[in-house]
Image 1 (cartoon, one colour):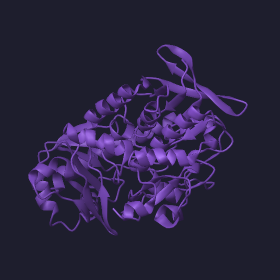
Image 2 (cartoon, helix red, strand yellow; image 1 turned 30 degrees about the horizontal axis):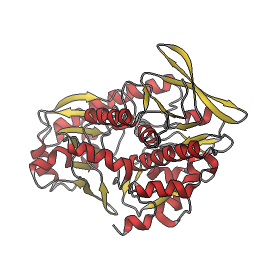
Image 3 (tube, rainbow, N blue to C red; image 1 turned 90 degrees about the vertical axis):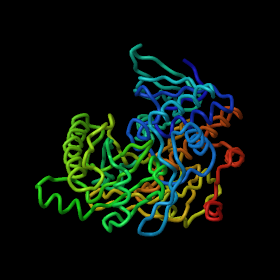
Length: 445
């Protein structure tokens, strides 16, 4: 198969990149190892971004979800540093369908249940990828490759430089987790209790029952978890948990495994088994200690492990913690993001979730060194460990995917390498799509 743009990874980032490129008339192939799109958003049951969707394809997608009853209104969540605007959770099953629909309508060729084993690099330039499927080993040629694998798999295999996690000799990385659903939760009773509970400091609680379907978000339970473990002997691994609703169902983020080498099949499997053990304990805690969960039962466990951090490519520019605090402006900005700072302590401490000023992401963070015709988008862009605590969140991932798709299309249109794409033209297209590019533009809204 021959394409002009190949996108590897159909999670939260890849479909946005593929749609952006295909809508400019390019021949796009999107390759996904599972049988549906959305990754951690859908299969992983994570259901919501940790920030607002401010324009472009991400906002179009969420508005489409709202139009079919698969998402609610954005809400303002309270944190220790103030409020943070968060896009509504979505129904993950409906979102699988909507992502696929937009890809097909744009003309994207999706290859489901297909694993990309390696990029093909000739004289330092990517020319295609090798894929594995029920059909055997095959080749897909391309003019531009966009790595949306989350772990920078294509960039690493093309010998682009990268660091793991914090970049130190003993690299620190945010821990892995696994979402699950609790069914038969009395949401009204839970919301009424949470309004006056001091042990739930970060929250968004709708005033009416209708809003509970997509708008209930609770983070905390620290004291209750500590007492539960002391009194029962059940050992859990997080100081706090997060509960949120989507389509009236309760999604639970409460597991944690530290120091997992996700590139080792044995270690990866051990992490999944440990998450299962923890889920059993958390279900008991919720049923025994949290009002509204008395009749609740386990409804669904994510079939995939949620991985927060692995490789960061070394790009033409590395986004720093200072940059991510909104202290830097960039001439080549391709996105402004207002996601929360969301750090799960690599050593196992409490989650640091807080509101911060908007910041900008430059195009150079998408350009890995030493390899031509390769763009990277999503959580593995060129960002340090501190900046990653914001740029790993879905709004930023979708924004970098969108920019990568547009840049790849323009590179093909103009017959130039992606490293020399006129960024001003990319910016004009993004602005035409309603995408803010300056942090100051978000502040003024």
